[in-house]
Amino acid sequence: MEISTNKARPAASFMLLLTMAMMYSAYFVLRYGGLWTENDTAVFTQITSQMLAARSVLFPGQYSHGFGYPTWLGSISLLTGLSVPIINTIVMPFIAMLLFTIAAYIAYRTFLKSDKLAALSVLVIFAIPDVMFTLLRGNHEKLNIVLMLWALVMLFRAFDSVQKGLLRDSAIWIGLFYVFVFTNATVNDYFASTFAVAATLTLIGGWGLLRIHASAPVRYRSQIIRLGSYVVGSWLLVWWMMLYVFPPAGHDFALAHSALNKIVDLFVTLHTSSNPYAAPAAEWAGKTDQFLVASFRWLLSGLSIAIWGYELWKVIWRKQSRSFEHLFLLALYGAFGFLVALAIPLDFTGMNAGTNLEVRNFPYYALMASPILIWGIIPRLRLLKGAKRQWLSTASAAALAVFVLIGLFKSTLDPVISNQWLFYTPAERQALAAFDSHSQSQSLWTGPDNRLVYANAMWHPNNSGGNAVTGYQFTSAYRDILISPEVIANSLVEETPVPPYLEQNRIYDNGSAQIYRLRPLTPFEN
Image (tube, helix red, strand yellow):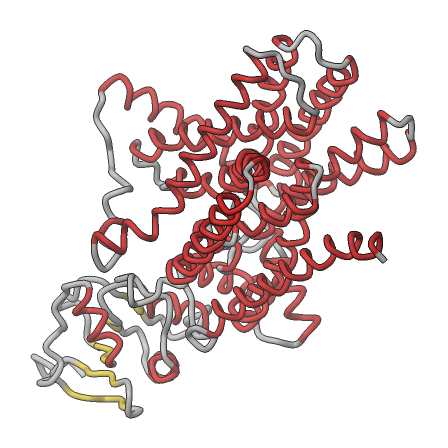
């Protein structure tokens, strides 16, 4: 009975993680009754609808960095009969969390050699809203993260099979590794390249650690050599996809050259072209809210860096032995940390494509920081005795629960703490549909930001009437104004004046949302 109980514990922990993942997804979807969207969600919903209409992954307006996510989204739509917006905003968050939880748990168990530590590492991820929002919103990054984690799992399965002399099994794992790498490239060439860069840096870092650690087993050195061949193969697959399989992605080579020139100009002139970190500060309701939503990010980074540095010190200076998985994790953490640091000067260069790369790279760094954090803290907690250990364990669990709760508010951009909103109402959607159906070549102002612009792009991707639905500052160029309690409230929190609509002609009213048309100034205006 005791053996059966012990075997059941990993399964129970994993099922608890899956339950929490589904609960997180349910909150994200149901917080606004499924009526939510943002830039990438609207863009990929629109692109997928256009792809289905064109019946091809190659069509004018296709996402130039990869066709994988629209293809996946469109395939699910065809199989289920559900509309693309419904799948991308209601179904996909659940699928994403399911796929991620499984992949992350297996990957962390591979690194840490412990079911309990793997489960705790996944649990920490639930408290990182930067990662959770990346997984839950309707764009390609959910697939990029899952595919990267599975590629790492396949990599270590291949290492293990070679070590045991199972050449047929190793060939299968290596083949699956390349399948995941190539699929990742078809989803997004930038993040596939990021993984290849991180793998290259990991290779360099691992080789350096082994050179320093002269007593490391000989098999570690052979594994580093094999890793080098896998890294070369990964680069070849990424380039093959960009140059031949999906030629629109090839323009990123020119983008890389432009980025290099901009970085050189930045360090030569010390003149920044933009400050991408100024705008996010204004998105939160106050300084306290801004501090709270960023608190776990800084706590995770600070603690993981300290643990990483301490582990490196023990490996380099004290010559302590570590498993190949632990050395690989240390090197991979350093690689993704370097990419986050490198992204900061890139952000200040004002690149047109891929702005705020630090925010884009941070989730991948956080995915490695979580097992580093658990690896460093849990064994030390186990060394404590009695009441002190119990108190610290309880305090840590309570703190993590608070951070998960804060992450829920941040990942949904809850109006309690955020000035930038995700949701729209049924009345606003109905008003947008009426405008799209009954207007021709008209401009509609929808609020102080792009909240309803994204909603319109998602539900009316073709815009057959040639209408323009826009937001931000109101000007005399707009003839029509959409007014709802939410538009007025959003204008108040963003301290943006509401256009003087009361004296204009009301041309639409569904009880909760109205459209007003500016009174004609000449007999030739309608």
